[in-house]
Image (cartoon, rainbow, N blue to C red; front, side, top):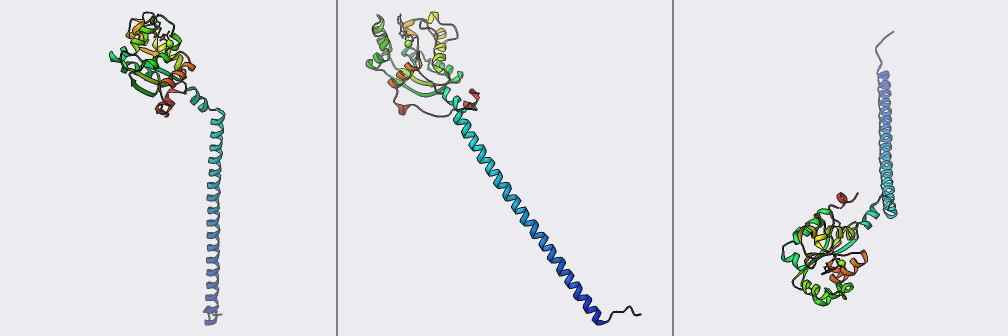
Length: 228
Ligand code: DAT
Ligand code: MG
């Protein structure tokens, strides 16, 4: 028996090898293509599901804000109360504008409008219309028109009631130390600062002293550090 291949046998073996290699290559290509297509579809479904999660999250945030569920809506509405605060002519002349503004700023209130005004008598008569029949009214008008006032609108949670506490009593001698009138003045006719006494009066006074276009609307960068 001879172990040497004939030429014909070698040719047949060569053809077989070629076919096997081709088969192997085709299977390899098939496996590769299958894996690639599967990976692509996985990525696509992941992207789609993350998009739908994002949409779901956005919808739920909007719903929550609409309902006021996470407090954002209520946070915005409770922080939108406004008060008319006015530094009277003696406060301006005594360079107390900065000290008074500082107290409101430090408390966390937001300044939304401010201007110096040499107020005409008619405007002050309207502003103090509830005191028109008081004996001190003419003196009050003379004092309030004796120089410029610093007219301001401050905004924030319960700013009207809190602003009144920060001002102190009408008579400075009865104002607690630590309040503006308690710290800076002595006489009722020189009590340096005005603050609205109710939310309704605040809106009335703001509309007397300011045009709507003079009042700014902006989100303070401190907002989320002042309100929880
Ligand atoms: P407040 O400014 O504390 O709201 P108010 O509205 O009763 O007090 O009076 C407005 C201003 O009028 C007050 O800041 C100072 C003056 N005033 C009030 N009572 C007075 C009085 N008895 N004598 C003199 N001026 C007075
Ligand atoms: Mg008053």
